[in-house]
Image (tube, rainbow, N blue to C red; front, side, top):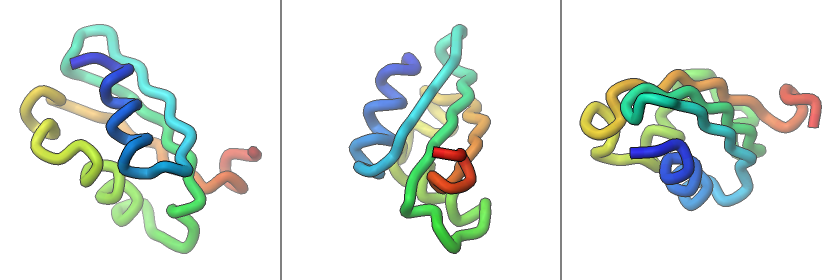
Length: 77
């Protein structure tokens, strides 16, 4: 698993999202996901939206994913 693949999967599931993913060891990753789709949603709901784009990879090939989820307004974009 690599950061580029995770980014592509999240972008495919949340087409309007701006996604940045980092992770050097292939199993632990950090991601910033900025999407209008997060507007009005609590952090847990936002995280679930991102996890849904990754499906069964979570807990398997992706051992850990630290998420920051923001709307464009929150990101200052």
